[in-house]
Amino acid sequence: MSQPTIDLPARLLHNLKPWRNAAAWRIAFSGGLDSTVLLHLLVDLAKTQSLPALSAIHIHHGLQAAADAWPEHCQAFCDGLGVPLQVVRVQVRPGPSLERAARDARYGAFIEATRLNEVLLTAQHRDDQAETLLFRLLRGAGVRGLAGMPRQRPLGQGHLLRPLLDVARADLEAYALQYHLRWIEDPSNQDPQFSRNYLRHLVFPVLASRWPQAMSTMARSAEHLSEAQGLLDELAQIDLGQARTVSEFDWLGVPSLELAALATLSAARQRNALSHWLAPLTPLPDSDHWSGWEDLRDATVDARPIWRLAEGELHRAGGRIWWLSGQWLRQCAAVGPWAEPSRPLQLPGNGVVMLSGQIPAGPVQIRYREGGEVMAVPGRGHRDLKRLLNESGVPLFVRGRLPLLFQQGQLLAVANLPGLDGSAAGGCKLHWQPSGEDQGLS
Image (cartoon, rainbow, N blue to C red; front, side):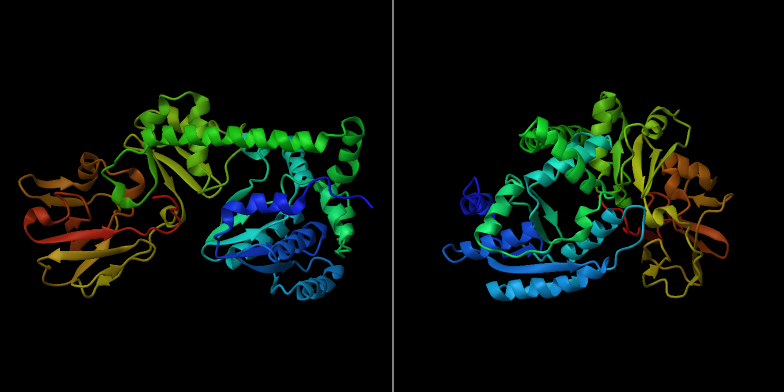
């Protein structure tokens, strides 16, 4: 019987050293070979080491009849080790990729289960990393994708950790046989219609017959690319630091960057900085579909360019680019009379307004701009609202959402704009707190 080529307990303990003070370690336990070995290793280490509390979580996808028996197997295995097990059944949404849909459902459950300062341990190994690299290479991924699976990343209120990424699958199998462990063999893992299975069963054996160290060297390449991505992230932070200047409209809560600071960079650094900034907000286009950014960047000053992305839009206004999503892309619903102007008024899909100072006597109403509005400005007479908004530099995307205070058809105040918010007339002052829904970064 073959033995592991490395000291697996020592390797695992070394990889987990920075996480020994976590509140708990939860093992993502499918019942397959990899997670079975990981769980057994941790329980064995806990006999001689002071480790955080161990528990396991099994995700039941319900995609095949054979899977119905897996929770029972996992429960029996965990009971034998004295490890608490949580079984979570998830609904896999239909879509073009069953693999991706199942993964999304699984990680959604992991996020829900991971509490503050807890660590979720998954059992992906070196061979999985090599498969990931080749799979993404064939899809034309960039440096971030080719860096493979990260060893650690935030998850829920805690972190996800992959402590076996530098361990070969053969070593895990040798350990399992040495300790007579039983594990689940998922029938779908043999189906070559799934891309990873095709690579695993039909491509990698051919590569390994010519280059026996292919798995190891490809996983090492992923480590090099991960380091390169780290440097690109640092460069992006430097460049974004120059573009995150103060705007007089920061109170909108809309993420924005100064365009001039980005425009001085090379095209590659622009894409790197923007990709870093947009990644938490929306899926990004591939390298062949960045013309929308170029159109937005190079548009004339009086143009109204928009770059539409999967989860929102980039707008350009006032020398800045602005990320709009959620309610900012939906038309505001009409507002009824303000029955109690002494109290804040909730605007459907548009935050809240309130009055301070001397409240006008008689009924008032909040409306939105329709065009042609005129306002009496102290010392200037009556002025067209459009011109006043131009003078104030109000971004175009805000103008249709900016609350206006009317009384008997007369425009009394424009929310949040100094000199127009009502305070100049010595009466009330109109405050607006926009909705922060779906804005992500602030």
